[in-house]
Image 1 (cartoon, rainbow, N blue to C red):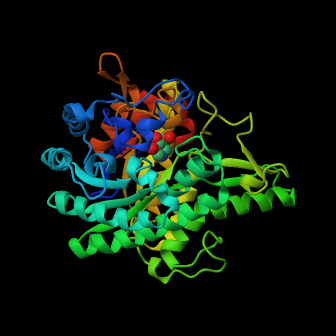
Image 2 (cartoon, rainbow, N blue to C red):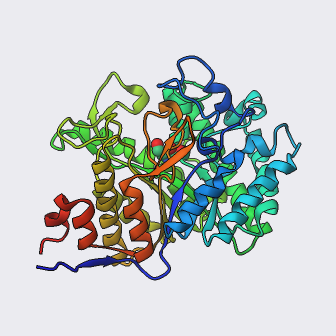
Length: 445
Ligand code: IFM
């Protein structure tokens, strides 16, 4: 029997990949991450982003060529604040020009740029002044944002102010695995609170400079389910963790109200309300959570992946594509365009990487068919990059990077993704070629 079923996406749906400055550029010297990765024991595999994908050396050109040749129509990239403003209010015009060339380069290749203004890394001078614990960071950030928007605004009108405030606050101020390596929940709340203010200030500044701009955030959404649904305390802790980790930040920016007392108790922040034009979802996995009195730092919940679920080689992510559907369903309540600003799979198992791509896109396709307003999908990521405390031990690239030679090799998922981007759809025939084991479940003909 010839199988011909096809899952088609809306006309003008954008297909792209996402990257972050520190993870791909190489050669940074002036940021907290550049300093942190030099400290012994901070990076699991001893790696660093000293060279990374060498975008600062110019290899962005060949990678943007690859993205365009693969049928992509959008790219989310970041700018490194520490390069642009190496010391307070001193601007590096060459760095700004470098970024101008990059976003121009994207346009020339038919890729719509989305620029992330803050993606984890901070200038050293900002950290010396107390970083995001100091409310002064809000004003410093606004000055930086204005400079970037003026410099890149000819080519960019889609902005992502912060990447994953929740993840940043957790790893940098609760878990301590990221700079500045603190373990202090009060500091984490303060940081998140200041970043929310900075978001709102940046939102207004961008619109003042560029009235037509679309301004959003990239938010890490992670369903958290009770380990034992019948055990009320597991349900309680899972719900509490979900509200704090996933719901607090977007709710604050949507309504101006804090679900959690991350500022003063019952604080109202009307200036935050309505400060995103589009909502970016970064989705990778879910957690299960079990009540555990010994874990006050994580709201008395021990999060884990049960052994029976399929996971990546490091056991960091569960292969749970339905979570993308749940995330989009949840975000649809904001009644704003939704962008999947990150979704990907970092593994040594290539067949699982390909399978994960198809399974997540199937969930994405379900949501667009409900007319939920998903407008773009940015795969994480184009070429293997520096994965923070994991170094190079978790590789998400469509293209495999040989760090020693800088050679790029397409993985099977790169070829599949290119076919999907070009066709704006995926078909049973593609599934049969790339992951035949999925055919009976995806296309039960
Ligand atoms: O690499 C990160 C990215 O910087 C933020 N979101 C998750 C990705 C994969 O770990």
